[in-house]
Each structure stands twice: as structure tokens, then as C-alpha cells.
Image (cartoon, rainbow, N blue to C red):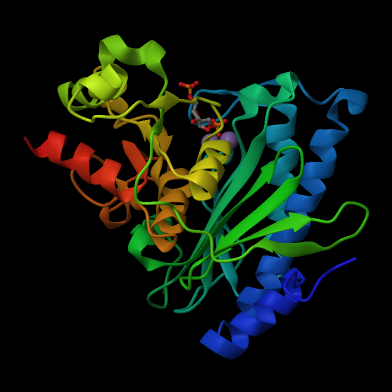
Length: 335
Ligand code: AHG
Ligand code: MN
Ligand code: MN
């Protein structure tokens, strides 16, 4: 049973079309992405029966072992995103190079970036994982297809979203007019609008960082975490709680729900790679979503969205969440 405010995904998208002129092509594409996510959710939930929770013998371009479901999820995104004739190219964590779907690409065509399965080290543990996507429009006609053409800053995103495969399957989307969260109604093909206009509270008492890397952290991050740990007697004057799921999608969903700050900073070990998380299909979409919900997303002294990409699988430092915490971390980075 649905209530009036629990619009179906299609009803919501048609309302976006009426209110904000969201193009029909984008609506069809988002419905196809929702289908991909629903299918991936099903494949994950049946993975123990199908024997697909474990690794393949392959590594991806990042040198990481691919899980069987990384590949399955990637195939679903490729299959469903190809339906829309306006999609010119696909960029995936699991693909070495850009996949062009057209011989010629023109201004206004879509480029889709995706992390088909985020947090896949959690698969065997039955801990939440997710999918992340970002969509930009090509700025100009391409006389010749070239992979550099997809190196577009996050400020140009027209849409970003993620699906979280947890106790329920969520779909969270922004088209630049706020952030809305949907829940898959089991047994149907429908995602219903269950979390309209999601907002990141400006203040928080919760942070997320992989503390096993502490010996590598830079001084601003050491200082920030130390001050959180001192609690009421320290400069923050309040206690902090800590969480680390090791699935960025789950961390961002928590921050959109009750606030918090997530850090995967540059440190002395990952600095040669530029950081840990990937700009085009992890940091940019999550940065866009967090900003659209009133939070902030920084590399530690500058917006993630303003980073000029130079490589397809480029990594960047990521600090995002409640605005007051991100501002404080930015200040520590500038001092
Ligand atoms: P992926 O599974 O797509 O490679 O991404 C995992 C990422 C991110 O989701 C998470 O925050 C981080 O890696 C976990 O890193 P640690 O292994 O250092 O905890
Ligand atoms: Mn990921
Ligand atoms: Mn992944």
C-alpha cells in the first residue's frame, strides 16, 4: 500500500520534469539505472546460493582483485545504461578504459561514471554494499572520440546517485534540486519516495575514518581526531562517537540520515596515488549529493567538485559531511 507522499520513482521524476524541466532522456536513463540497481540487489541477496560472493582470478585496472559480483554489477550497469540513445560513453571502476557507445558524440550527450559495487570486500560478511553513479553532459561536439573528453569536473554533474543494498534497498538521487531517497518495495518493481528532501545536519558528534591508518595521517587529521577523542574536556567541548563500515555508500547514507563526517584523507602511504577513493565515480557523485543536502565535500582545502580531472581512475582525498566539521578540517589544513 502506498500513501500520497510515497510517490513512485516515475511519479517523482515526472514531477521533477514539470517543476525543473528534467529532460525525458534523463528520466528514462534513471529508470534504467533503477532497474540495474534492483537487479544487482537481487543478485547480491542470492549470491550465497549462486556461489558468487567470492573473488574472481582477475584484477581490475586499480590492481584490486575483482569479486564475482563486481563483474556482475558492472555488466548490469552496462546493459541498462546502453538503452538510452543519448548516452555516449561509460566509465567504470571495473573497466580499464572509456567504453564509447557511439561513433560520434555531440554536445548534450551523456557520460555516465559508476562504481558498480562499492564496499565489495564486505560481500561475504553480509554487510551493506552499494552502487554509485554520476552523469554529466558533454560540453561540445567531438569530431573524434578521445578518452580525455570525459575528464570533466564534478561541478558539471547534472545528476548523481547511489543505491544501498542493506536491510532494505535504497535509491538516493539528486538532479541538482535537493536530494531524495527511495526504498524498494519488496516483491514489486517500485522504488517509493520514503525520504524526501534529505538534509545533512550542520552539526554532529560522529566521525568515520579508518583508524588503522593513523600512523600515516597528516597533522591536520591527527589534530582533528585527537580533539574529537578528548571529548567534553577538550577544545570541542563534546563527546564524539566513531563508525567505520568500509562501504562509502553506507557511510554517506548514515550522514544523510543523522549527520556526521567521513574522512578518507591523503596520508603518507596513499599520497603517491593521490588518495584512496576515486574522483570520477566515488568522490564527485558523493560530493554532489552531500552539497545538495546542505553538507560540504572537500579534498582538505578546496571543493572536491572543483578538482580538474587528469586521469580516468584518479584518486583524491575525501572529507565530507556536516558543514561545520568539514569547515573545521579545511581550517586545520590551511593552518
Ligand atoms: P570499492 O569496494 O569500490 O573498491 O570501494 C571501497 C572503498 C570505500 O567504499 C570504503 O570507504 C573504503 O574503500 C574502505 O577502505 P578500507 O579498506 O581502508 O577500510
Ligand atoms: Mn568504491
Ligand atoms: Mn567498487
